[in-house]
Length: 236
Image (cartoon, rainbow, N blue to C red; front, side):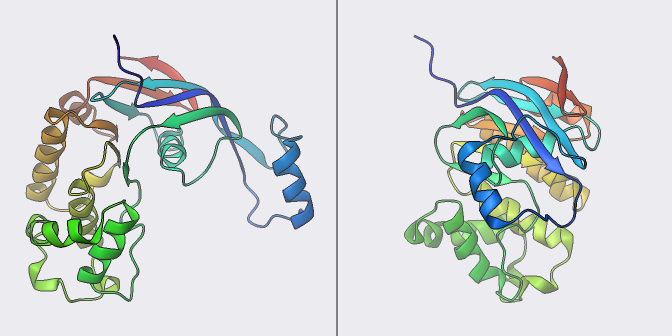
């Protein structure tokens, strides 16, 4: 018997506004949440970031999302991670999720790397004893042992990457959402990250990967979904 999908999206639409400031009252916003009267209507400055996206990913499958900037790739990952919610349609994700969708997301700039390992690990669902047991391995992989007591606000983007990636891949999640996380940092560390992603595939983890490198997609995914202006235009 086939296993249930690890994640599904069924007819998902996502609407955003170009307005920097929203002029609706709190009362109107709450009313819209409960009535959903305007979900399928675009306002003057609204646009569809995603249009009728349906997707099913089996346990242990690695799927790539490929497209130009603005295609909707990152929006899909934000929906799957629960950062935002569909305007229309439904989605479901089973198991623990490790979202690597923004470098340093979940880090507190005034806390040290050591403190952020515990905080970010907890956000990813790790228990304190689990973090303690894996702490040395997290630091070793990140190659930041000399900076572990430094507040992360002093980190470069590459150092943020190392720390964020290392914590996430030690989280024993069921689903990994990876958004261009390996495009920052030196070549040696990028190769190290790619090797770890391939290792996660062999362990049977479910992966959703975004990259502008088509060759990389071929290496680390089972199939590729091509997006353009919020729509699926091809599947490979």
